[in-house]
Every structure is written in C-alpha cells, then in structure tokens.
Length: 226
Image (cartoon, rainbow, N blue to C red; front, side, top):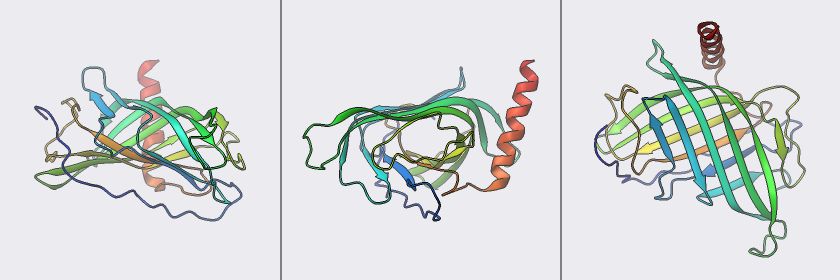
C-alpha cells in the first residue's frame, strides 16, 4: 500500500443477532467510520492498533434497553502480528483492549454524565482476512478472543466473565483502495477507519475452527519464546 489512503465509501453498521442467555448485555457496538482515521499497522514492529478518543457512535445493547447516552468514549486496541496462515488469513496474538466512557443515565445529555465506565482486558488472538470488493473499496475483516477482566458498565452491569473468553466480533477495517495483493509487509496508514462489536461468550461465539487456529498459534508463539 503506497501513498495516502482515502476512504470513499459509506459502510453500514453491522447488526448482530444475539442468542438469549443469562447475561444482560447482548453486545457493545462501536462504529468509528466517521471520516476520522483510527487504525494503523507497522510491519516493522508487527503492531496493529485501533485508537480513538471521543469518536464514532457507541451503542450499549443492554436488556432492558438503556435510555442514557455515552460520551467521552475512548478505545485502545493493540495486538501483535504472528504469521500468515495457509488459508491466507493473518494471525495476531496477544495484546489488549480498553473501552472507557462517561454515561448520562437520563438520556437528556449533555446533563451530568458520570465518568469511569470501562470494559477491558487482554486479547488472546485475532484473525484477519482481506476482502477487495472493487478497485476503490477493500476491508480487512476479523474476529478475536479476549477476556473482560475489568467490567464497570451502566444498566444491569451483567457481563459473563468467570475466566471465560468474550469475543471481538465483526471487526471491520475499511479502505478506499484495492488491497487484493496486500501481504502484511506494508504499513497501514492514512484515512483508515473501523467498526467493531464486543459480545459475551454466551451470546455470540465466532466459528470454532477459527478459534482452534488461534489457540494453536498462541501455543506456537509461546514455544518459540521459551
């Protein structure tokens, strides 16, 4: 990828179907496709990041639905490139995700938003697949596994942790050019944007075979470092 990436297409927010379960939250969705760059990848260090402050729309899908509004939203996601699998997917291992925000419970906003809400924790692994739909539009789509070790959410405040994994689902990074020959030896810069959803394990579980690959990759990286 050379030169400045210009995003030229409007993408719809992914709507996730949730399976009824004990957890009150079915998902947390954050759409950062708003003409502000938030994503980068450095092939020299292998670091992939999504970082944004007070950008995009954050939707807290609690049950019953929350009437309040979120503000001062900050997201920081980082994960480390590992290898390209035989399937052509790029594998990333480790890292962390942090989502913090303020919340105005009466929904009148700006009102008196209460700061300090957070859901965060370590990432186990992620898989990315490059999709080029035209000469002017490509996406890098992925899913991941992470553990919500810090949870402070408005509403019912229910998120199934219990030492199990949650998922980063429907993570989409959008570009305004053809990435069909992209091989992860080139940096990602410019006007690159993303959207993602966080889902509890008992509401949405990404495809098991992909998670098996993540687990095997994590073991392989651990063995190489010993």
